[in-house]
Figure 1 (tube, rainbow, N blue to C red):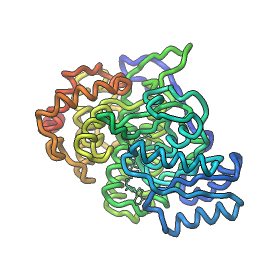
Figure 2: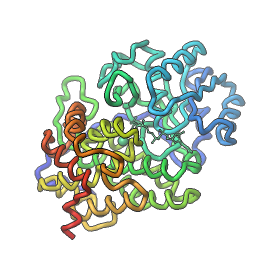
Figure 3: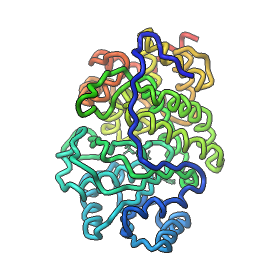
Figure 4: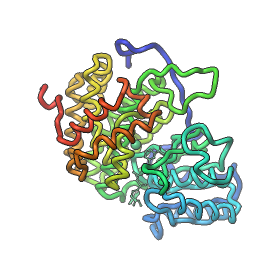
Length: 411
Ligand SMILES: NC(=O)c1ccc[n+]([C@@H]2O[C@H](COP(=O)([O-])OP(=O)(O)OC[C@H]3O[C@@H](n4cnc5c(N)ncnc54)[C@H](O)[C@@H]3O)[C@@H](O)[C@H]2O)c1
Ligand SMILES: [Fe+2]
């Protein structure tokens, strides 16, 4: 049982989830059943790696056998530039799709949310940048992840690239939460080591940042912010996710064919999505957006690289240090904030996440601009359990650049 940490207010919680969630080997057999209430015409957005694979062909055959008409679209560009999404939305409109089946990594699941939004409410997409700007329901989505990482199958968030913006932009609304999530580890079995590592460590960051979120006390009389901060309903789920991912992610990276490792990381990633969707993530995410744009590195590479430095700085605050220490049992180390930081740094090394920002080609002179851009993600910065100003971000960035962890010296 998780008791409230010192200095933290009492009970407050919010959950917003798909009405149906299935997880486990074989649950993909539920897909026709889940699409059935929405009509017979299904736009299938599929990750390019799936084209011609027996697993994907079998999903399509099952749909046809159940009387569905499908239109398969696989031209989803990495990083989701908005122009490529317009073409997918046109496809959906011409086909008069009743629903969208999204099968793929987080990029494809996010693409499905954008297509569902465009079809229902028209463009330009920039109208919806930010949160709570989607005016109503979108086409129903059945989301089937093929990576264990983003949790997008259960979250209200889609992240896209707009060439007119310096960073990727988010569209966040409860209306974007899929109608159903189908998490079948079989679909992750072929993911290469780097995809497994970066997607998986991002899920761990979701678990840890939602567990350490600040208590925001939102006004329950009005429209709630998308991220409501410290969330009593997710504490146990976030800890369970962290435990599974810390234990099994290195195994999944080392032994891609290990079914238990794939099963456990798929469940951990889903739980982490359930945890952060209504709660929020904080500084590793705010800092990753500009770093990802500058270096063109994967989202999870950046959030995973940053997490130990973020926690190491935040643990100087005593209340936050005790909250971080509570993660120790889940991570299999002492219930001590420095030990938690070391455990996550060790995991990074085990799975091949670069140690420092210098390792991914960031120059020290770029750090001030990164801090300024990160501050623009105000809703993420607000989730930090310690108020984060430019100086604090620069401190984290400087240490992440040089590889300085206080926790390494406080064994
Ligand atoms: N919506 C959210 O809540 C949320 C949360 C975190 C991240 N994201 C976004 O998700 C994206 C990252 O998603 P991701 O980490 O799943 O990676 P991804 O979807 O970008 O996929 C990475 C690569 O792996 C391939 N791939 C995916 N599954 C595979 C499999 N089973 N076998 C072989 N290859 C496979 C893809 O084709 C692609 O080339 C980023 O755009 C990020 O911004 C969204
Ligand atoms: Fe993330």
